[in-house]
Image 1 (spheres, rainbow, N blue to C red):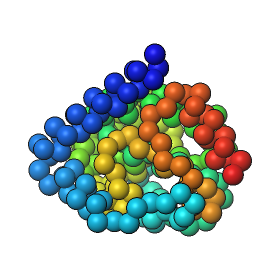
Image 2 (image 1 turned 90 degrees about the vertical axis):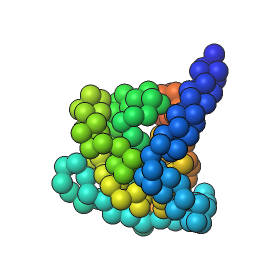
Image 3 (image 1 turned 90 degrees about the horizontal axis):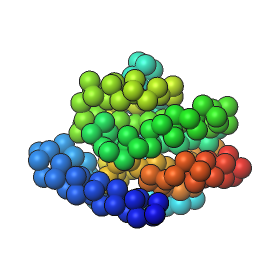
Image 4 (image 1 turned 30 degrees about the vertical axis):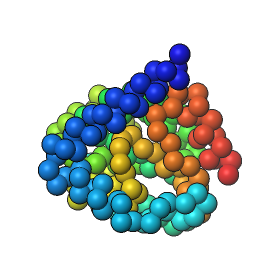
Length: 180
């Protein structure tokens, strides 16, 4: 039953994204077009580097070695599955914050800052929320739809790309990332 619900949600996301892209002008379409010209992300290899300003005003960097593994979650406030996974991300971050970092990257170029702030407040995000206002990080990571999360080890290498998962499965993936 969970599989059917997940597949249905994925189908809805793809339809909504298609409609959104056709109506978004150069915003989301530009991200998809730029993504198509980037090399494919490969498991076990270094992820693209980027730096973005967060809602808290600080600058955050992704790429290269770090003290803890990192989850980079691309999302948008208009995305139904993003709302579905948000409570799980918030809970799991609180549980594992000493062992992982989590950056929620809002695809601000295709979203509204006001709506993004409301989303963050609604779900009580206590981890950095980065603003991809130019769409450069989304392009570098070849984001075609949201939510998409990248599990990155301490060496800055891609371990896994995931989409919405049940909380238990997401937790297993986080534990594996920590152990890697």
